[in-house]
Length: 513
Image (cartoon, rainbow, N blue to C red; front, side, top):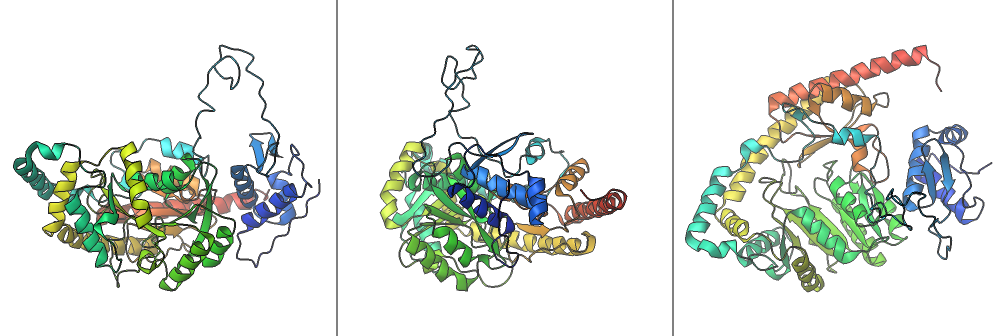
């Protein structure tokens, strides 16, 4: 069939999104009928003069929204039941031919296949990479956690012992659902000193930041509703939202953070939540430009969209003045603030916190009571002493000095060893570098070769909810020593250059298809 798809290469909208939007409208207009087959990705790429991966990304986006379906070796088809209001097509209810197979969804057997919502991977081919074993001696650029060598084991052990000796069994009982009051008061005071007006009543202690994200998600949206996230974004954030049935929609970011123009376009379509990391964003380490804060607040307020601001690693500042948070400019109480002790101390300490708008304090407390009753009281009691006696600030001073040196070595090594055309924004803080490779380096081949040589990194596609990042990677530099950082980046650079040379040789030998 013949399709008319307009592609504007001067537009700020990504090409894949332009293609997806045009195809979506074609389905809405009835020019593509339910069950009708779409042109192949190769055919459409040739017609539009774009890369085949761009068309594949557009198809994945439409499939994620329910407009099309696809099967390996079969092609892509307009869904028989798509997200148009009033659609009355019913799914096939024919039972399995073999009642003992357990594969029927409506007949004789029982199957779990329709009882849960599978989490959609950004790239199917990365399933293998995620599940493959990691060498014990591997250089770990993939783990966004602190260096175990600097976990404050001694200080924390002494405080735990002191609490148990002084307070006895009372700290092994259930605690308040909101959390230990002195710790909440300390957190409120610390946050107030950062220009965010908050009371201890608005602080909720949670079991790590992931637990906080889960509570917010369960309170604010239901399956099928839209959630906006930065693109690229924190993988375990948007995967959680997808697991709860949300339609996750990416908002592009640039070197200044969220693009307000793109946010306005997404917000106009409605959403239940905007999830953002404005300070040392994961994975890019980007800091949201101060001049963008007011437009973001105005756009979301006008659209009635709450903001969940995640301070994942906001305490890890290496240069310049502390960045400004969105919450500090929140005049309408529309922002929830999330933070954690896990990233700055040690991941096994499952203690995080939420700063809640006043209207959410009681509903969130009730929800938390249904999920875990209360967070561990012993850890909270010890953490309160750790913070109030100055140990936290001293620890941060120590690790930020170490991280600053490791970041410098990372950048020096990237400059020295990575192929020309590689690019990365210079982080002011956080845990990682976001590196863009030249287009002629195959990221999947690089990840496989690096794993064989004992170097681990996080491939870019893992951070995109609907595809993307095929030439990007995240390198976490805080976990490894300076010597191992140099060795690991030298290895990655050598492998990337080898892949470039191999690609050029194959291109000279084989005509482009």
